[in-house]
Image 1: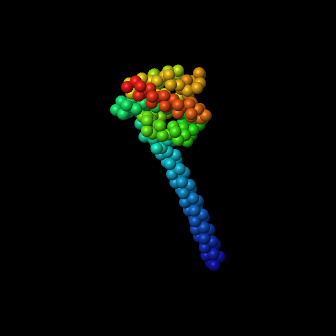
Image 2: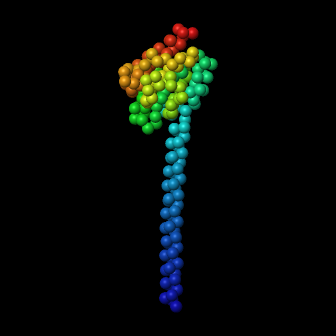
Image 3: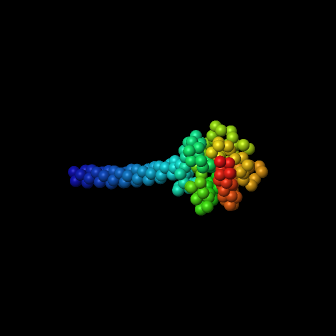
Length: 182
């Protein structure tokens, strides 16, 4: 009988030990799941910000129509940045744009700002085609300033990270044109 008791005691101990190990693994898996989902939520929140990394101190409009409305009220030009989140050229331009203090200051104070990951229904914002990244300016008279272009003949409205000085000059041109036309 002592033999049966000790065998059953061993079974109880091993079963309890097995349950304890299993319980620890379940807790560990839950912890990993919670940490992973928290990281995914944080990523989603970041990409849902209207700035999308182009400048958190800039007031960004949510849509082209909102941009046109605010532009008409404020008499500031609208700067439209077309880009894609998964495009390496867009990402490189975004980093340079966000790091350039002159551009950030002008964007914050002198422009209505819109960055789009989707195309607008207005074909005037694609005068030489639908590509990314591209930046166009619209003045308060609702005219797309097609003469304010980047350096490249194959994609007139694209800018690269090394073109920030050229982009800053074009932003100044967009402001000057605005004042001389009003």
